[in-house]
Image (cartoon, rainbow, N blue to C red; front, top):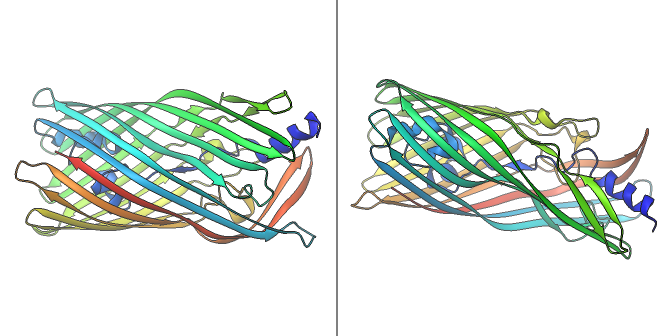
Length: 387
């Protein structure tokens, strides 16, 4: 296989930021986040993990706070179909089993200011394919994962209004491993970019809290990867992405001493990385959660809906994300010294749908898969400790 044909196949499979985005994790490896399917993130004011989700909530910390969590992600998707206009049957599945950490610490400086730092996995795309992305046996492994460092601060304006913000440093790691016949190619690259978060909370009364959080986009567009090919060649690949802007609005209301209901809505601006080859929709979210406190235990469950990231005709094999539902449940125990231990589980269903994939060369398009995504889900299991 000559270099031009290899380059065409590679560029077609990664056309115009095809690896961009993947998924943003709604979960930050805390009990409150995973058990509520991410609904509690917007109004989080319990501990130092607010530095990740809602910096204004840090101002509720009395002295200092520490949050540590680990979540296990088990992602799986399956394609079944055929090569168009032929009887060639195609099938494949991709899976990824990984651990994602969350770590945060906050301390109060005076009556008004609290500062914090956090480190967590923000999301990404990473699949190990059994027979390539669409049953063609080309791409064995692709991964694009983001790790975020937040330096946050919160300021209490008065008893009702709390403001906060964070400087975000995101480290994005990309790797590719593929083969075409007897030719293998692989490579990896990383990039670091800065962004920021603005956050606000308003305490209407002791029972009701409103919040708003805006996270600016993170620009990694000038990222290029050199694929080392087994025949001694090297092929440049554009893997630049834009991590999208996000806006979340939340409300938390205590119905009684035992019951608290929470709700959120928001938008992720996936159109930030739209191009002629990849046309993503802005994703709108809505969710609700209910927490019940019984003595030293808190039990919580939540459900969340996200609108389609892609219309079916615009999907690419590594981003078959339609409208999806998330459901979480968990329990947390508080010890006599105020330290909390939690466990939570979430199921995320990313949608099953018919798909047709094609690649382009100048003005012509060549369809290479016609079939269905028959399975598409993520299991999340988290363990957390905080005070």
